[in-house]
Amino acid sequence: MKNGTPTLGPLLHDAARLIRRRFEQRTADMGLSSAQWRLLIHVLKEERVTQARLAERLEIEPISVSRLVDRMEQAGWVAREADPQDRRVRHIVATEAALAIKESLYQSAADVYAEAFKGVPEAAQKDLLTTLTTLINNLSDAVSSGSKDAS
Image 1 (cartoon, helix red, strand yellow):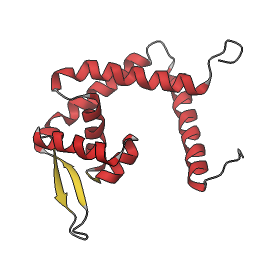
Image 2 (image 1 turned 135 degrees about the vertical axis):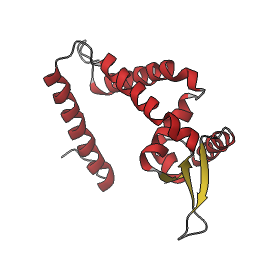
Image 3 (image 1 turned 60 degrees about the vertical axis):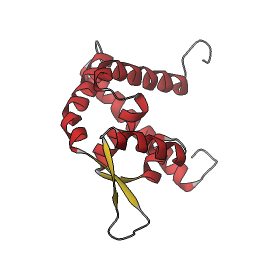
Image 4 (image 1 turned 90 degrees about the vertical axis):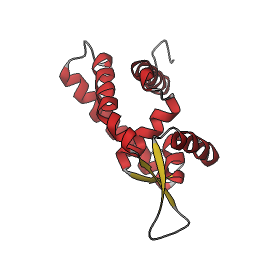
């Protein structure tokens, strides 16, 4: 906080943490841990994804992703499939069980977002989403270029 005013980093962190916790509460009956449903969301979104890409998206070590995928494969949520172009690469794909709960997961997320935006005018919601998108694009460009300086 600067002069008692909240700053961007802690606000984003707290909002993301509380959204994840609320989503966990709403999906607890599905038997997925927080790490599992986060991984599953990425698999459902990308359809076929490598473990390396999942590690990057989830910001965890590849060995941790491998163990997580092992557990989820044993539970029937995901499967590993060989890449037809490169036999060294294995893709993670959603199983029928995962596809069966896809809409429920998305609905739970929509419910959490609606709860988070309660009392926030629609125009302010759109402005926030537009601003966050711009922020993400700006920082993605800076990270990609490896620049240490602000532009």
